[in-house]
Amino acid sequence: MLSPAIKYTLGRIGLFLAAFVLLLPTPLNILVKAMVAFIVSAVLSLLVLRKWRDEMAEHLGSVAARRTAEKERLRSALAGDEDAAAAGDRVAAADDRAADDRA
Image (cartoon, rainbow, N blue to C red):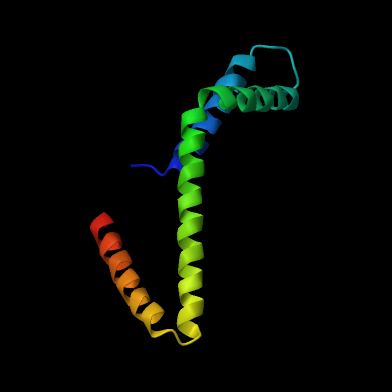
């Protein structure tokens, strides 16, 4: 399954290409066509890709929260907290198992 960020990015690129192809028959400079296609795709993405954008934001928020928690755990472990160091061993083992499952 694709990452929400990749899905949203591919959707944005698809909207841009669709708008650009629709503008090809017009007698405009190619750069003007590209700028118009960019603006049209940006506006359409606000309407059409709302669900994917929300999924991406949620995913990025959970990744940021997980990284912040791991950073705090590492700081505690470096400060001498034995419980934080032991918790890190379990987290690393779980991450290794998850990576093996995906491979």
